[in-house]
Image 1 (cartoon, rainbow over the protein chains, first blue to last red):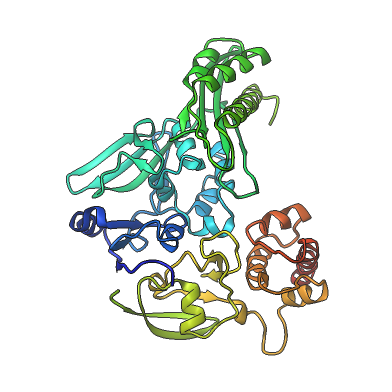
Image 2: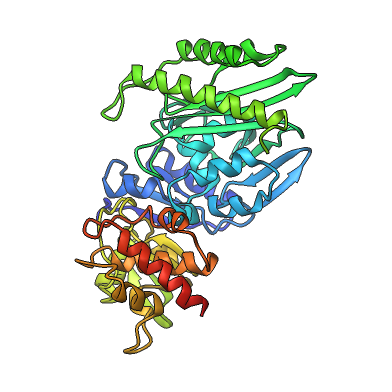
Length: 289
Length: 157
């Protein structure tokens, strides 16, 4: 066995789970799918005194659609969501397929990926891209936090130690919205070195709304506001898309590590934004079904 | 720390054991149940050597704790053959030289089993994507792909 010793509790209700989190505070760690946490435990990068396993908590594994949004319970496995989307959200479906491998997605949960907040992960960026919302519960009540405010740093979120992510809400793109998603990874299933996602809606040949998110390029998933502002209200030409991606890339704050320099990440981000936007625009205009 | 009694079914046989919380499923299978067919590789979910089936679906047994699996149904490589008769996927690996040192083989067999149940007639591209999470340092993968393609024919029959 590799992890440092820990106590294990497996509550059956959200309230029970919150009691454990309240009692143990920073000493406790929530175990959902465990596909990021277990490696950290095995490496002893994380040494919680108590693991609060929420896998047997009832009522957290539903996928429903209300008010034009997918409501995804925190324990919904990524593999399950892949199938449950059923054509309603092609961008999200494409992103789920890029997470690890089948065996990872069989266990990995949607809420776990959001709460873990790896800056190179797909789901946090896609939630930011579609203006999604994170529902949390704590002993003091519920909060709904916009994705833009939730991710505050690498593996850091607005979640308090005694709060639990209970649901994520994914506003479904309006009919006719085009999407694009590109990432560069060393191997299939690896974390992205850099990725970009885009949702674009057109009306009368002009961009009505453009939403672009970049991941693996800095401390958190980032909305490319400069690209969005460049495109909105204009006729999307190849030159304009290029301008938009360049403007956004200059605003990024990429990190450097042993896999890629900051400057490399910025250049790749620019290219991937161009590709994601081009795909989204051609899908929105119906020329690439 | 505090051990707990769990009951689970592995390869059709019921087991009851007391486990410490930090015991991973792969260590439990090997050390507590003496099922050493499942191999421990990277122990952080990258190499795929420890892949087993949990309720029919492939999972990394190094990323699960045995204590979580009270009531679960697990299949390991020991559960594939029928007595002396190899499972068709094992037979295909033997026939097509889909293994050399054999370290990655148990994980690949179970990954292939779950994959073929969902994709009875896969393309080579689909096979390669399906085994992308299982590292093999010997074969260069070609013969593994050959084996899985052949097993697909066999499984379809």
